[in-house]
Image (cartoon, rainbow, N blue to C red; front, side):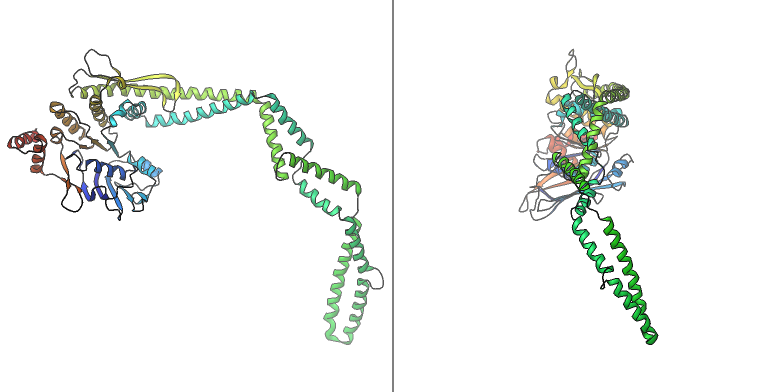
Length: 551
């Protein structure tokens, strides 16, 4: 239930803090005193988008905080799905800065407005004066019936299978579309694939050919340089290896004459060994380096072929050409095996349809059962509201096609007059009848504990006398199962509430402000007397107010 509402710097409200109670709460006050502002602030705290001009003081931040007491664990999963701490006391806080920046929090955790609204919708149902038109909306009717039937688990199972069903339908459509495409397109794909497969592409070969061609194109210069290097190392009187041998021999003799020169002889000997290894490798590379005109031409032709294929297919490198070939192969194979693929998906779709039909039937049966009991409750309530011959039925008609919420079409059928068969409420219900019907429906739904807090914004507009008293009685009964907060102008309704709040304007300061306070018993008598006598508190009005409150 809504425990407390704190509003700061919102519209005509500079600062308000008000606590609400379980049961039936009523709010009264003059027209324009700020009742709609109060609901607007609560909606703002629950994630509604707000006019950026709501700031009472343009230089200060607006803060609206709504505190709730969660009396069951029904919402724990929803909180956990949104990474929110779950506690018995839940705090929604919304802020709007002078720079028009909005922030939202649930239990001090920053959240998106979508999350705030999703969670808030499970805590409070705010019914404004124009929401009775929702009764004519098919989606609202179906949602309401599913709430009554408690179809949450069944609907989740159905929608999961419905997603599979649509996936199979899309897949089958794509395959059949592929099968009916022009054969020339497949022939063209096969031509492209044949050309690439004849090229016998191998991973990494393009880079290897580039490297080999680079060597072969410079083979003569490489050979010349190797011959020169070998000559310097081993040939002629000035060959490096020969001179190193003489140097090693001289240092070997020197070490006998000069003992501390022994390490020089060893170092020269080590260099001599390394130079012999280098000379061997140079000779080997000279022998291996051969200029083969035929091999060069063959590699050049292969390189040109691969380059042309990459250019033709507009790929940036050889790896993409390989990927293109593999993709073409998959497409051609898929086209050639299309009939087998279609048959497989058709079989899967048929099995899915069978399962979906079974789940839709389960939903239909529960809806029909709930519709009968619900219709009887609504009729009993609405006949109390000056419509003694009213009839109300929830029609549940199974359709041949599947929808996102089953295969049922829901219609609310209504008749206010004796001897007139119920018809679609969009055609037969007036505005006043819709309001009374919506009240009866909300009252009937309240027995299913569908939401902790229900708020009515002048749902009783346009009625008076005995009907108003009946509405008050219905609302008092609703307060036995949920927290009901009703904004009203009717003394018959206000007198039935357990808790009475009065909202008013204060024009004492430089700017008008809205305030609200809870009334004690004497203040209630006085306020209801004013409502009975158009603000003129007479002794007769006071006595009538006392009678209403005692009743």
